[in-house]
Image 1 (spheres, rainbow, N blue to C red):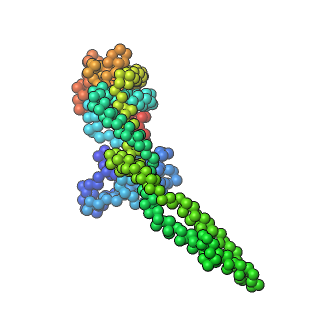
Image 2 (image 1 turned 45 degrees about the vertical axis):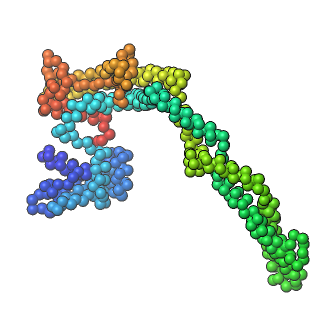
Length: 444
């Protein structure tokens, strides 16, 4: 009976479909279950996203069918859905613990996780603060170590960067300057052709510069046309006059701009030589540091940033060491707060587990949970001083947690995996899961 229930839950939870579950002589096996969402936001969102319908009582029906050919189908709330949707939904609502779960108790990290789950926010908050300070502390320690051990190499790199920055600062390039110079050089090199084209265009628009009446230009011709239409008695022709006036204004503006352009076309060999020299200076930089001037400026910014981390002077190293020590003190304070929270939770958890074990044919057994700091020497790269002792500052704190089992009155407390048989270990795990039920987000 238990196997059938668990197998059915396994299929409804999106587990692997096995043909062996289909009864002999039948074409398909069906498992159907009703999930009560109970206001679980994650579960409700999964059902809604799948387009499934929730019943009036807030529940939803899931169906899994397995055919003899090995194919399976999943339905949720009357809609066909991928099997993965059932897996996501069940993850929010059901936790199934199998016979081998007790093996997790053999791992020290899992034993510490048991306390942390039981304690909830009392441990979660100081653990987050501890980890944030530890990350910053490790970064400072690593930077100090690198600057101290690679001082000669970093000094050489800093010299090369300083030389490059001095060379770039001497030229002082502007963003996009190389592109602008290229266009300017093109204009200066082709100034005669450009002047001829602009002059001809201006004459065609504005007329002859000397006022030759035989070459009035487009502006003069449009003006003459406008006068003819304005003097006409025909209403249609008079209405065309304002449009010609608009064209005359536009052409006059073009003629003025062409005149301004011609004034900028200065055939100055000295200016061309100066621009070409500037371009040569920029090309020396782009050959060495980047493909264009913008890339050179980006290299310079990166070089300045890198140099800020290459200061190996005694003052810089002393400042880093001071920051490391300050962070170590702060880290020790958070570690102590975290340890105290775990010690308090360990006593409560041990008492609760012991009480549960009395109903599992282990009435004389007693659980103890120890929280000890892992003492190390100065050779440990992650050593920090807490309460006057050097301890290992790991990612989860400075504590080693161990579950001890006193099998009966008078027996010494021993590590749970040494004091308990396989069956007893399973019962200890079950008692822990019952006690930790309040810390889980799932309902079943």
